Image 1 (tube, rainbow, N blue to C red):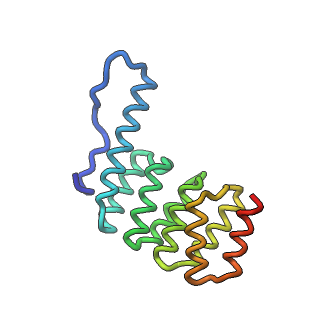
Image 2: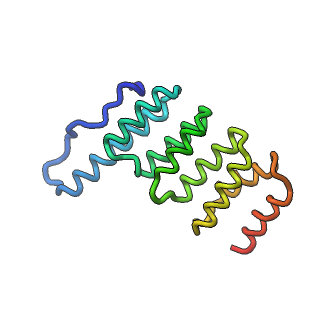
Length: 159
């Protein structure tokens, strides 16, 4: 299935004895898997924009799993500005979304932006995981320097 032929809606074949909440949950998970599968195949910004529009139309823009894949895709393909715009629309970003964007900034050579986003994450009382710390330490190692790296390391010892 290509990015431009995404099929998000449709009737699923479910056992008749499921209650409506179970049906909705199964249908929602199936749609999520379909979207993520197609996202992982996208290679061009036009495909990404088209798929992102479908995600918005289907009210999936706050789904953390889908947003995570969007951020990873944008970062991997050097669409980091687009990734940042997506991130800004998330009402309550979690540590995984922060980390995906921090890693994207570092991957694209925007070390200071990665460090700054890490600081915003900490200021928002979100506890960084090992991946977030690793990404921001890479930024310190590549460009920012020893002082910032020591600050991050010091935060780890405090928490």
